[in-house]
Length: 536
Image (cartoon, rainbow, N blue to C red; front, top):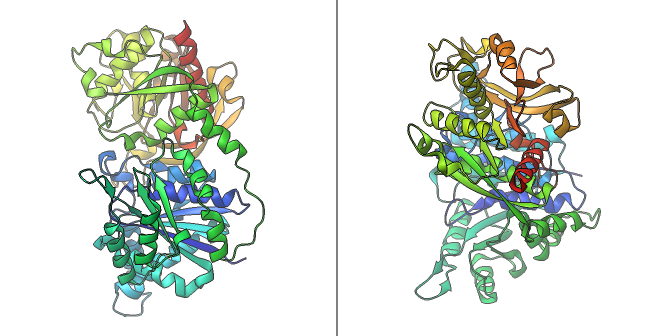
């Protein structure tokens, strides 16, 4: 069959839920037996989000091939359980970089380079590459931002052209909008949706379906009004009321008949009846009342929780695997620095320190790690969290505060964490870290080996600094166990502490591979240790 394309745009305001909608739609179609891939078109001029502050765009999600991508790709992978690749996140920066590179080579034979056709042609090439590289039969393509943004116009123009290129029976356009609630009158308003669709149609795109997001139930007359003024069938106006868990959204779409409607419009043959049994069981497990454990996440970007999206979801998945609710308390690491009272860390069943960059809040994270070590509280350190776990133990072992990472103190006499040798001469910051999937050999008899129940695993990395092998023997004497190593045993991938119920750090980011129905083994083990701690 020819590849089918579903294009998703947003209106009225940003952060309306296009990414989760695309992910849920992907799950809907996968349950019907089709192979699915999802692509995000981001209008910003950065080549990728790798050099952006988490405060700007949330977490940077890393794929198997080392691509640094938008956090929405995390939603995509968690819902459709498919490893995506670098063509699944396209930015304006990538597009212009490609066009300018072609122009410099003389590929355009002296022609004047313009947005149409040169920019839009590259965008369309990138869209078509998704099915070519993944083999997907259905490609969902989400455009970031909101209709009316000047940055989005080339992407929307490319989407308009796609219908002519691939044919109407192979394309389907969905517009996700927001219905604001006016508290003074107690009513939802459809006028912003009407204006948004009018703006979209002025570009040349008429939506085939409108998903109306709202915090309140959408009356039937509002659906009829949107259908009338936006020129879509009433059954194609889908109310999407805010739900208590993201994982309920595919079930909401199924109940609304979205799958059947799309089937009819793009001429899909029914392959199998969707079986939502396992998914419904998972959603029911999330909602049911369970024993609760308390986990502190000590981070430096907690003002924007999207900076830790995958960590939050992985903790939830670990809770599902252990049939407990995980109550997360977000603690700013800077608030623990200096003489700050650490009583704020008391009463938690587990402590997690996630990744990050830069010196701010580092000493607060180290104090939290020390608190976990001394009080035998289960601890999980991710990337920077693992590195600071090494720094904290070295300080304890040497009886001084000089051990450090050269990221924070280039002149430390004890550089227990140091820049990787192949990173020393790199000046460009974008896309030059150790990125993507690498193998890790587990050492028998360790907590990591027990959790994974495997000898070799593959995990995603994003870092420049590594454990310094000059201190491997010395810190081994201090009780550190190097439970995960690279195949050549040169790089420490996982470190643990002896004589502690659960204290582990990973140089990689296990949160990127956790799934709601298949928790990452290390998160499941961490939650189990935290649960055991709560009962002591």
